[in-house]
Image (cartoon, rainbow, N blue to C red; front, side, top):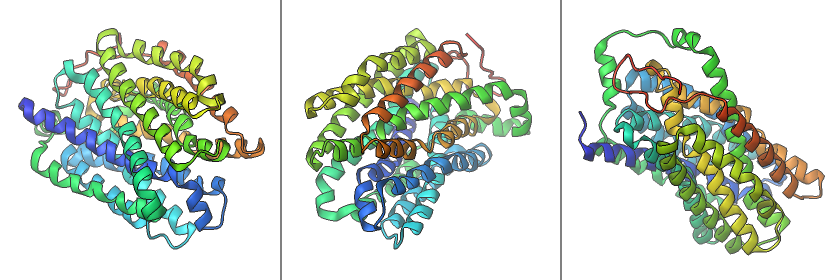
Length: 406
């Protein structure tokens, strides 16, 4: 049995792993225009790198998820963090756009592995009463990484340029030292390993086809919800509104603070009112914010709209680490949450390219493609979750733990 101190180290490591992974990813969204200028191409063409990163995350979730189920959560998490840090550093030295695309695709594999492994390690290590608040905290790592990227962009970009930004993105490699020193293995995984042979992943998936399809479709909508509201928003502010680097960074910092507050707040709320209710409230609340978020003109109004939007978007997302791990078949919890999440990412990977292409066809007006995506997926999420299943009280401490619908 882990001590409370060990459990806190697990939570800290998983939070930092996702924060720094997201930091490395979001460096990209601030420098799309600069990369395009370096390689003499268009912003839309450079967004293919985002598509490749998101698409390859599904492969990474499968590879690292299977490793986590076979070899343990802790060593797999260490390998994953090291891999995404090295690939982030290599990106800084891309000599051509083609090499840049290849490195971002490989980075996507590493990025895809972190969330599922870190979330399963955490949810299997903590008391059930912690799950909602910790779920919100873990998912808040994503906007925390975006916030960190915003600050680094504001301070460092004028000094180091876009290549230097990716060099800074290699620093998460030092997290491996902390994991190695302070983080124990999942007690649930250790108990399962000691219990002997268990069903193959294909047998388990065969018994849960309906659940798997449902979760993949749901996570597709969720990924359109997050990436549709985040990936091109700095470009929207730079290109359509022609705001300065400082103004863009300030707005990004403001909306990422909102995202952190939303993730933690709705995650904690879900422990009391249920996962479904918390997600539906957050998704529906995004709808009346759209006009301010996408169609306002002043930096203040857009900053306020973005702050409120990310409270809603990441509020819904804040419930997901707990919700997916609770729904997951216990035998493949290292693989199932991450793979279904990242398959949703794969299906939503073209979001930035689609939004950018529509904006270009409208004279570089990003307001309508941003608003359209969020309006559609907010409704889809509310309906799917509202009529879906929940397993808030599932036990995660033995081979017989099975999610029960509530």
